[in-house]
Image (cartoon, rainbow, N blue to C red; front, side):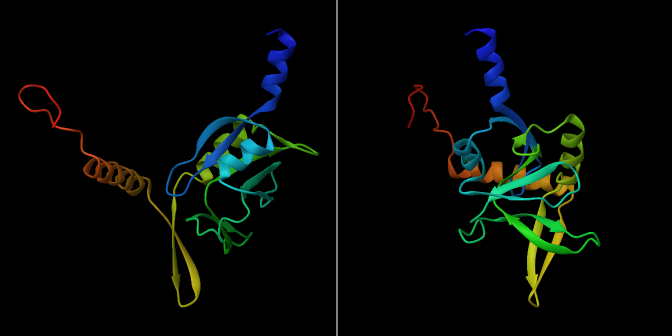
Length: 164
């Protein structure tokens, strides 16, 4: 592979922030190709531009219809919830006509913004959102790990060393 091919491959990759339901966001390098973006969000992609920054949210456009879990809320300038994103989404940088990598400053800003998972409840026809404290998120993660271990316990060995 020559230097030009390596450079072209690097240009096709972009650094994004992945935000999954009930998890802290993480940074990932993914190809800037339609199929890869669709795979990352689990379906047809749709964009929303809720910020003044040169970033957008790339999400599964059918997430709510598919019954994906609500992930994070979108807030207006007064801090009121006006929508909620269902399923995994990506925070991506924007150019005039394409997606691009986030800058280190954008990564830090949006990592902090989405650090705490959110819990959604419907009460009297209104959607209420509560941010999960970081300690609670950690407990939830440990609880899910323990549940998974109980469902799939490792096979025990008998005295001869054979699996039962």
